[in-house]
Image 1: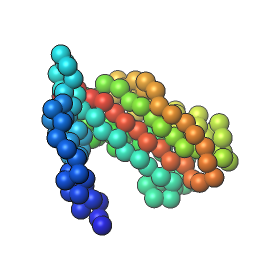
Image 2: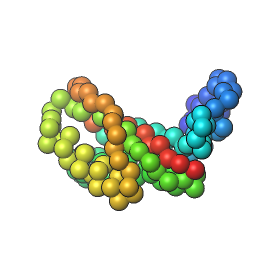
Image 3: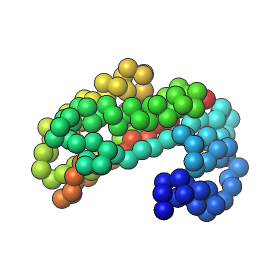
Image 4: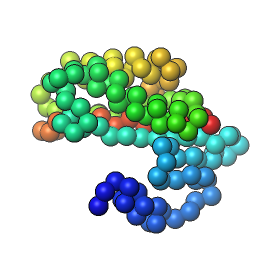
Length: 139
């Protein structure tokens, strides 16, 4: 099953919700918040060996790319980013220097677009680096 076929299947499995103005399948979801204008929400997961080669480009460029793909999703919906959350699964080797380089790259691009990183999660495992960024934007 290809990506777009899977997205079509997801749409069929996702029941309508009054606050979800646009759900799975576009660059970002559009969600209505009580008493506020609708917001955009997008997330992407990037994996070493699939979406980037950490050994070739380094952690700062990985961070920039991870932020860029989400900021561009908000821009594609004619929105402006407001905040970002970052989840990382770090390989057990590389440790803190890898995490710090990754964060510098994430922050550099987030700062260019006035998008604070407001939280996220970290973990480690025996596999390769995995980075997930979620960006919230305004319409």
